[in-house]
Length: 594
Image: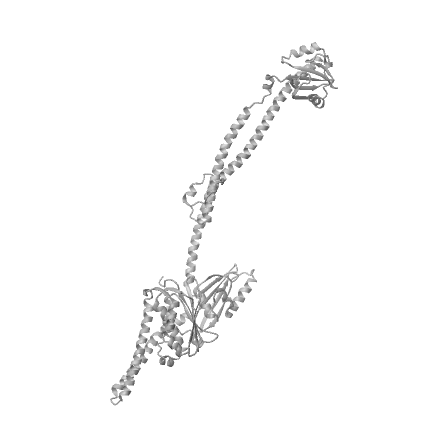
């Protein structure tokens, strides 16, 4: 399995997720630890402040406004607190008593001390690690306001006090341990989540490249909710992929069916752009049209399709109408009858089908007349030969020159009979052994050039001009003899029946993946419309007397049609607007026996 190159700076989703989660978690943990640290520190201070407040209350209860130094000192000593300093201050800030400084008059006013200001406002207050201006020693002060005075107790920052105020770090170690455990859990969770998303990404890339999904991919998902969802997504994709493959197969079947269908079918978008057009649609539309269609969209420019075009335009303006939108018209053109049907779908795309309704009847009629025509065509030369020979046998006095003339006529009729039998044999081989014909790479351009050189004398005699518009190197995989017979018989037919002083145009006006589209047209006398759909019938002649006089067998165009059919093509004849007859036919590019 190929995987795309990963940049060196690429960070996986699981790592990004883990880093994002732990960054947030560590930030929250640090905030909690910082808050808990300060809360613990504040708790120790409040605890010490509370104890000193009790001492202050005890002193207040015992001194009872009696500031006797000896009495106060005995009370302080009775508290069993080392280095306890007590100061009594009136509400104006003057020191009435200080256990450290015996002469209170030497002490400055304490009204500006922080703990005194707080006590005056709220009843009590403390100050942490403030250096005394009297002793120069840092103290923890706790002051309590009473009716006439303030009692302030203070403890110097000794090792014992510092240890009492020290934060208990057990909660910190517990928080760090909990953080490590949670980080491990987060890592495991994000790794599983990242694995699922990485697998989903790999699956999405394979699906985008329309690759086959690895069987191991499903088993690699973690066993959690996201893994289950991912597996369900893959299962749904597989079912959709199988459905897509099945639809593709059915689509190919449909395309194959349309290509071998006996009706011309074209499917177009609502903007009249080609979606799918089969060979018969192109063939029939060119037969109906007065000009060769280079693209299928040009079918809407055919005047016979005006009703279809108006119906489509009208349907586009009435999109809210319900029900099936369908219409059909009949077209009689160039000796053929067509039924053209249009069906408009819900999304305003539409389908146009062209059916040649004369085909089946023509085939039945050809089969019925085939035996009669063969018998009739064989009877004519045989009867002539028999008549001339009978005259010679039954008349002894016929002059030698007359006998010679009769024998020459018998010989001419025998040659005609031989050509007739040869053409019948060619047609029979075409019908019965088409798949046994040898194939080779044939250059159509070179083949046509050779034919033009072969008939150059006949072209000069009838003053015929050839315009060969075939591009170079038109190659097909087919039978050289049959391809030769197509263009040679069309050339001989034009030379024989189109008159004199006319022009022959040979052109390959279009090609697609499978076919070349050829036009062989002359500007001669043309053919009456009622004869067009019968030109390819065996033994059919427009002017029987003239055809026999010119030595034709009546099978040339039948051979052309069969040779075209063997090469997977179709052929039709129509009159040009400028006069003359035009044959439009296709020849497959690939092998004709595939």
